[in-house]
Length: 132
Image (cartoon, rainbow, N blue to C red):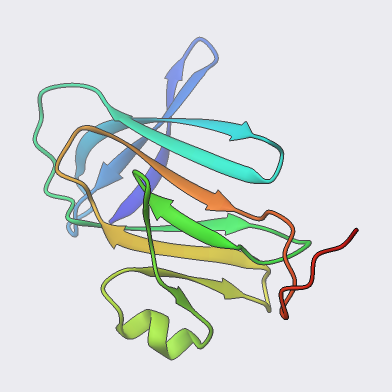
């Protein structure tokens, strides 16, 4: 799937998906909100009556300071992969790509029209010690 920026004019922009032949298939309206400073919620709300052929989605979020603590799709946590090859072979999950400092999230697109992807970069350490 390719996601393209679309200019609707009058200072309105949006996103649309393309199929493998790069024909415009469906407008999507993601509403991105940030909650609690260390969690990013990406809400996808599909408009229109066209049934999209998109089955899988991959998101890349820039996170220059640190990787994620967890990622979920509509509240269901995705598995973490430390090694890129494991993430690439998996059907779903998330991976922190250190060279470009991005969090990669992939998953099967939910059947419902509206869904939310949440990525947490809350404070954590590698050995589980809490800071007082």
